Image (cartoon, rainbow, N blue to C red):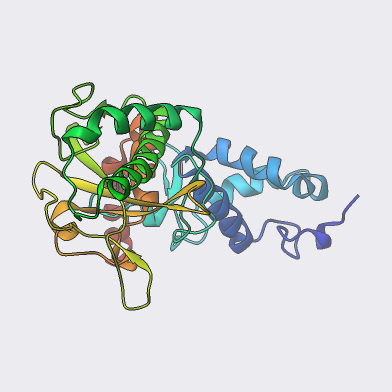
Length: 296
């Protein structure tokens, strides 16, 4: 059996060290992208680090207490009324748009694996939409078809990811099933009680460092879209990585990767609404408590 001194969680007096608790909670919440009840987070931490419980049987109570303080308030927040805990960076006041995939850090990006459904829908859409699509680059029919197929793979991989994880928020585009009809967006999301039109966009230029960057190309409409999810194919077109998202007005002028909003915030918002968590209410409550604390 491990001694208390051997556990990275326990302080010298046998109680959990608040910084270790905060770091472990931060890692788990970042992976889940979900605001959760304190008891659920405690059990998640102990399932991941079972040696902590073996080293100190009462550590469950200590961890629960540390999370409710909260430990390390620069990382975590706790709402006493609902007993919910999450990452403080999620309580920003700008629109946090999407989660479902492990992310070790806020700058890490989800990598999606296309499945058979993607191949099915890309094949149908390429065959039926191609005669009606404009070749913006004027580089010949073969290059045009190849570009549509690659873009369709990225689009459908992202759309099915959202459909699978947040079916309550997903709506088809206005031209779904009508292959001769043009539409500037690829899907719609019900978020904040409103319908947002979303375009899944691929890179269209390179920044000064040679990294793929995003922005509207000539001939691409700049209306009828609220936001863009920026994604691209990697590893020989076998996977899709989501670099982030941005509002339509910023996309029109061109956006390097480092200026994109993290997809994590969009995931957190969608998960909160799916779990019936009032993210805006939590933000207001935490902000009020912080102001009260600073005014003392």
